[in-house]
Image (tube, rainbow, N blue to C red; front, top):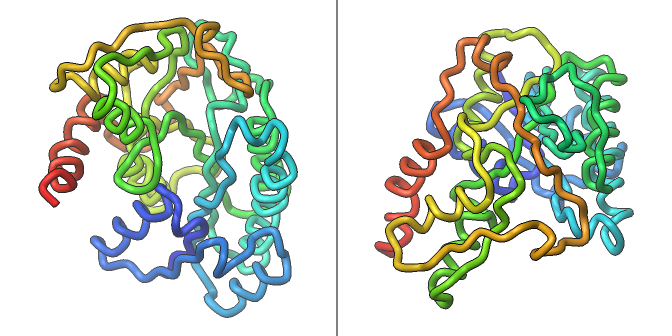
Length: 285
């Protein structure tokens, strides 16, 4: 079985490559310079040459605030047009597709956990583009899994964990939003789940995947910095304005993912393992 990864230089793309290497699986990975997914001819050419059995579509435009203005066009080109090109090629070359989406397809007004079947209502440009990308995958007719995730952190690239640590190194006190509820996701957990869906031949469709338990960004930050002397203080979203709307409550149900037989650790457990296996090594360098 041969895998094709898009978004090779992103934090998920790099995690997928690491996991596939560890498992001794055959794969090819393309970054945006090697494969412009917004170019349908280039995508078809890559599929023709590589003949993948499974496509792990990790390429995405993720600059949520920039997507509201300067990055609006690129956001749509990558998350919609690019995803459509990859999905259409997967259909044509009979490859299974695992595409990644986001909790931002929801408006965040639900007080309970969002099910995969719940109504979507994105409130920012990034969420609207990711939803349109989901629809492109579905309409392509490819054998596809759409995995919605949230609050992603990991070894590679920029993310909230690294941001908090960087700020903590120069600031004795930090303020972090405490009125947005969600679920942090370790890239390792997400990558393992993407392969798991293929391995167990799960039913095609939409799945929600994050690490278990609920948190606010303040909870997350406090756990990241629990072994430091930094004072982490909660604030409201109103005190920390951002250009793009963020859902207040985007907790997604994990029951469908668990029903496939996939074991999901809590985000605190995932963060602890990540800290022990990745962050400590970085500090030793």
